[in-house]
Amino acid sequence: MITINLAMALVVAVLYSVGFYLLLQRSLMRVLIGVVVLGHGTNLLLQLVGGPPGRAPIVGEVPAGALVADPLPQALALTAVVITFALTTFLLALGYRSFVLVGHDEVQDDVEDRRIASQEVPAGGLDDPADDLAPTSEGSDK
Image 1 (cartoon, rainbow, N blue to C red):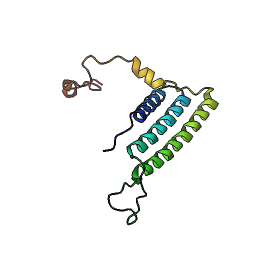
Image 2 (cartoon, rainbow, N blue to C red; image 1 turned 135 degrees about the vertical axis):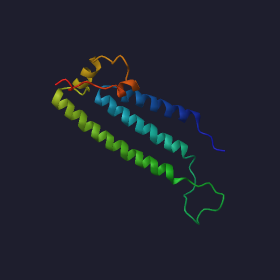
Image 3 (cartoon, one colour; image 1 turned 60 degrees about the vertical axis):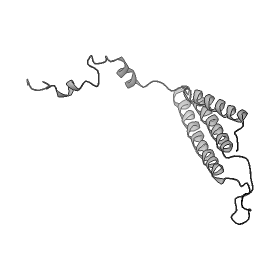
Image 4 (cartoon, one colour; image 1 turned 120 degrees about the horizontal axis):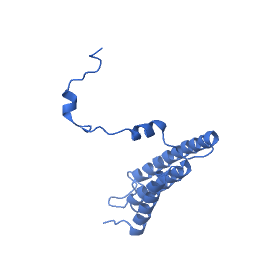
């Protein structure tokens, strides 16, 4: 039975928690660092669950019952590296564009979001089925 190293599992947990914390910030550079930290955490997690290194998985070359390496975690880690690189370049371009246009990289609230947040909530609620069946008198008096 193969067990996972507790120290490595704690490192993955710390990387994920720091990455998600940084993703929730308003600064695009902090979001970028959060994506990079999450990418590193994902790569470490994939290599951790891949198990210990073994012999190359070549059919016919390895005797039956010998410990062979699983190539799937390595392929998934390579895919995660490519995705992290693509997100990093996109967020760098977005942060640069935001800095050039506005002078900072902080994401602002949308004006429409503020307008909707300031509206009153209907008294009946949103899921009241009686509101759907009630006749409306809009435009009938004209």
